[in-house]
Length: 178
Length: 100
Image (cartoon, rainbow over all chains, first blue to last red; front, side, top):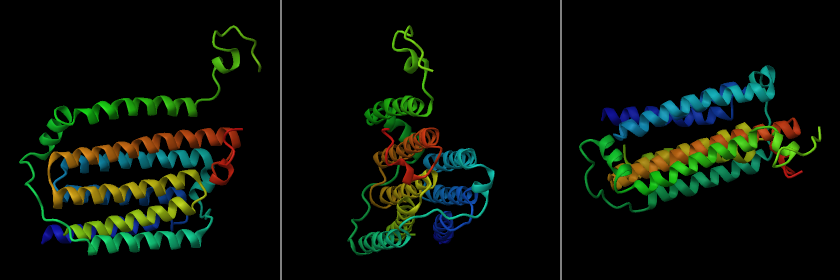
């Protein structure tokens, strides 16, 4: 009963904060609203006994939103990032598509005859997750690790300005073009 | 708290994120929309896991979704930085000719 009430409070906070992301009048406030939405969902995961993933979601997303706020101020300057503004295109079609998507998803959620629960959760869910990724699901970890490393390399290649290799050639003995 | 209510909340989060991803002009705001959509996916996956089959496999799937969110964030910031350097702008409308 209590968990049900807490879930509904968190659900209202998550959805209201999600709406606020695109309704508040400054982007800095939007990042805080998104962080609030993620914290509410992270706490909902804790209600479902997903302790590790819930805490990880909260910590990771709060940090990410802080970085996002810095990016906004960095790219747009203090005033546009913190002052009221609205930069949207195709507002009405986007609204129609999103409402239609919600209608389809909600109809499916309510009308599909979901099967009953099979099996019971492990006594220690965090340990069972650790054992899974280190034993039977190790391929997932082996795949995720190089993907994350490739992401670091790709992000740096995209974000960094032209290097000496671009200006001087592969052996660094070319003529500098600037 | 039932599977249906969890899925309804997840659908609401996904739809709000979809609206933002389609309608926003600033790259970082588009990323926020995508993050909100993944937020809904995480909640829906957690609901499926808890109410249908609470085996460790579902937790691993959630871990993959959270990893995908991390990758999206890192690449999004990198593209935003590249766009800002090349076009002095962070609007999606200016990103139609990144190749030049």
